[in-house]
Length: 243
Ligand SMILES: NC(=O)c1ccc[n+]([C@@H]2O[C@H](COP(=O)([O-])OP(=O)(O)OC[C@H]3O[C@@H](n4cnc5c(N)ncnc54)[C@H](O)[C@@H]3O)[C@@H](O)[C@H]2O)c1
Image (cartoon, rainbow, N blue to C red; front, side, top):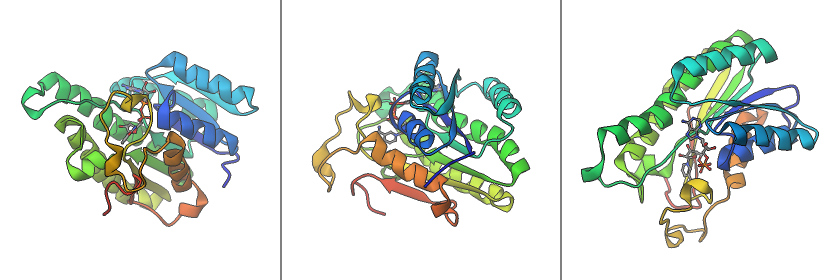
C-alpha cells in the first residue's frame, strides 16, 4: 500500500485516530495536510512527519465554521493543486442523559460531528471532481448503530447521521470516480475515551482497540485495494457489535 504523489487532508489530525492516519499516510508517501482546532497540535504532527523525512503542513480549523472550511480548502487547492484523500476525523463526544441534554449541547455536537463532516466533504468534493479521483473516509461510531452504550443522544444522532450521509455522498460522487466510505470504531483508547466508562468485558476480543487499529482500516479504504468499495460502513470494534 503506498500513497506516493497523493495529497491527503485529515481533519482532527492533531490527536488520536486522526493523528495515526496522518503518520500512516506520510510513512507511505502522501503529502499530509493536518487540520485541527488545536493549531499547536496540528503543527506538532506536521513537524513529527517532516523530522521523519515526510511532507506535511498543519493549519488551524474549527470544523463547525463553514466559511473557514471553504477558505482553507481554497488555500490547499491553490498550494497543492489537488486533494486525493480526505479523512474526516474531527469530533467530540459527550456523556449526558436525555433529560439533561440542552439545546446548546445538541447544536454543538451536531455542528462539529455532523455538519462539519458534510461541509468539509462538500468543499473537498469540488476539488476532487476536477481530477475525477478521490477517497473520502468519514468516522461514524458503534454508538450510531446501537443507540449508544455510554454516550449521549446528541452523539448517537450525529454518528447515525454520518453513516447515512456517507451513503448519500457515495452515490453523488460515484460518477466522478470518487469513493466515500465510513469507519465505525467501538471502544478505542484515545484522549476522547480516557474518562468514559467503557466496559471491555462487552468486547469479544477482550480489550479496547488502538488508534492504529482504526487508522489501518481507514488507510485500506483510501488505498487501491478498496477501489470497488463505496458507501460501506466498516465496523472496527473487536466484535462489540456485529451487523
Ligand atoms: N475513541 C473512540 O473510542 C471512538 C469511538 C467511535 C468513534 N470515534 C470517533 O473517531 C473520531 C476521532 O476520535 P478520537 O478518539 O481520535 O478523539 P481525539 O479526541 O483523540 O481526537 C479528536 C481530534 O478532533 C479535534 N477537534 C475537536 N473539535 C474540533 C473542531 N471543532 N474542529 C476541528 N477539530 C476538532 C481535536 O482537537 C482532536 O485533535 C471522532 O469522530 C470520534 O467521534 C472515536
